[in-house]
Image (cartoon, rainbow, N blue to C red; front, side, top):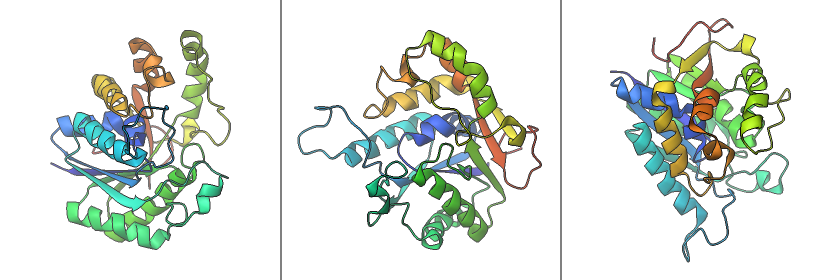
Length: 257
């Protein structure tokens, strides 16, 4: 049995980016540990969704625990930073945000978990955080440094296959009423730079159930859940990574082998 630590910026990121590989690892007998930098305090929530006196972060913590159970995570940890908001917002520089965190200090917090777990695998994000969110960029910086400090042998940068998404976009948009993302140079990673493509269609129902657990952020009318099941399988049935130290080119189909 090996141990995978998967590091994310906000509640629900884990389900979208790594839900498949988390459940796959669990079913293969590996230990899965989820670490989240923030509690997603700045997420948007429909009016009347929260109970009287309930804070959004409280709900999102509970949603994360529910999703983690679906995905097979044995341990969930929050590093204690606050949500920085989208890039360029005044909230980026507020005291205590993950974006303003000292990278060395934050990395040591994560490294302590990696050492405690004797982690074999760590997932972070690519160097631009997938789409430029400051907290996602910081996950890359902090995660990469933490792996160095802890000596974690296999590090994977979760990302999106920009070319595959462009190929799929027209078909998905034709079936679901949504505004497609701007797939510019800051969105995902070119296919030629990827190293690892994990087929998670066997665990796609768990991935979708985990997203559904984050009801404050992913409604039944959202792009993710409004999508027909077969289209969801097509769009989200592969999770993409760049393995640190590997030559570019998709040559791997698992995070442990």
